[in-house]
Image (cartoon, rainbow over all chains, first blue to last red; front, side, top):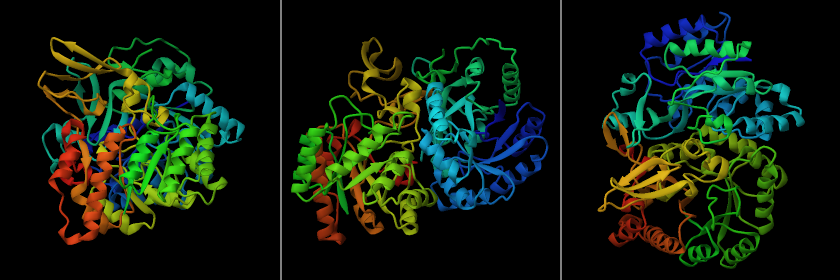
Length: 291
Length: 331
């Protein structure tokens, strides 16, 4: 099993972002995804900066993949997507079906990202024919669902044509909206948001009136209130999962990658989770549950 | 511009047709559609009757097959497509790529509409579905501004259907997992958001509490009107501020936008609410029929009538309506 660092979902200053990726080069991650996947107004790094950063990181022992935006509404956003798809060197994680269209036209191999609705082997087969090399399973699916989909894929003769990646650590991206919830939390209009996401490098915590942490607001994206953590589930991924994804939230995420590495290598340890962590989706129960 | 109304039951279907709908959309009695609720939708017998009623009145029937096929159980979704064809329905509304692929290969003549649950919001995505599955129409997610809808209409020859009225999804449909995060069940996997079986109401010293899978969604004082605990419409706390962090209980209402929708060349306006009663269907259908007719008779003089708004407010969530994402201010 390999380890990946998913795309940075938060909005960090340019220098912080670049420093993070320099550190990431020395981490246990085998694959690094990078690019803005949440909001096109976040331009500390513009598309061309992401592409040059990605190219600079390439050929240093890691597989580098450019990630595309999940929710594309304006023609200008499709233009940026084209820029990514035409980078000429790196593969792309498609987070909208529009990206698959552009990438398959250009015959650029791609990763099917978690924000694409690929729920069964028929869809996997179609995507394989269009150039998919890796599938990041939708975040709400379980081990059981994955196993069934892969059994079908085996029967269809396509299992060997793609890798399987699972979102295994971090606050889970659960929804995308036209509305910016971070701007709303500051009583600002989206058009006049002053890029306030930069003030919340790990999003804004949102709780019920009883204090239960239910969401993390991250611009137009709503994340799980609890941190997803499949560290204790690595054993049950063997034979099914090829890549384990850690979603970066700070430099600590590189330590998390290291912990997963240790779990893979066999020093299986049961790690005690605190009550702000969850693993429900993998066990086919409510996502926020912990089993 | 087609007026497309919801029908969760045979009486609702008949009411919609009688009150002026050009077309109705329905779902089968299983998890192949995104309103998979107890007591709702059509078994084979009712569906045959409904299809006959629609045909007898020269109207159109659309069948929603808009959840995602479970691995190993694809047959249920494919059977739904077979049924749709056997009935002589005018269109199938499909979200899952596997189901689209089955439909276009087996029934090249069947008109395919891309469900809102497929979440196609841009020209590249629409291209994908048009080139691969020859979709005739796309139902647009409620995340686009009217300006963005206009840009899309200029850049695609696929027909556009938009949501015109009803409960407001504030997330890009088909890509929202909030419901399964709370309950394990989502629109994509089981065909329901914030399912009723997880809802609990409790009178407490703090007021009436609504819960979803035991998670507190909202609290109401005796003078407040309580609403269904759809989880994105609850009151939550961000940094000591208690408010509707995502959205208020409110309904989408675009009556005032009819002229713009017409000028944009929108093919169909869709009324949400297969889960609602025939009485709801009747009121909404009558108002929308009157509004569209009024515009068509005298486009220049079109105005939203006060009694239309009053009727719609009465059947809206929290008695409030909004233009939603169509208007940039909402975003």
